Image (cartoon, rainbow, N blue to C red; front, side, top):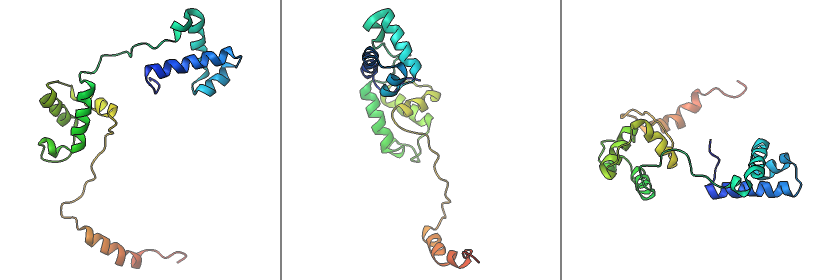
Length: 159
C-alpha cells in the first residue's frame, strides 16, 4: 500500500533517512525517527549506495491515470454532497450505479460500477447503510414512553 504523502514528501523522507544514516545513527533509530519500518531504511540505503541521490528520487505513481480531471473530481464531490435528490433521483440515497449515471450524464465519462466505490473513497466518502425506520414511526410517542414508562419497568439497582 502506498504511504501517505505526495511524491515529493516521500522523497524528502527518504533523503532525511539517508542524512541521519550519514550522521552515524543506526537504521532502527532512523526508522523510528522518520516513522517507517527498519527494512525500508535498509532498502533506501542500498538504493542510495547503488544509484546515489537518483535512487531516492520520486517516481510516477503506478496505475492508470484517473479518467476525471482534478476539477471534475471537485465537481463530483460537490454533487455528492448536495445529495442524490438534487441530481434528480427519487430518494437522497447514493448508490454506485447512481453515481456512475451522474458521471456519465455530467462529464460524458463511463465508469464501471465496481470502480465507483474506490473513486468515492478517494474523495473521502465511506460506504454507509441508511438506518431503516418505519414511515409510521412516532418519535414523540417513543420519547414520551422512554420518559414515562421505561423508568417504571426498568430493573432497579440492587433489587
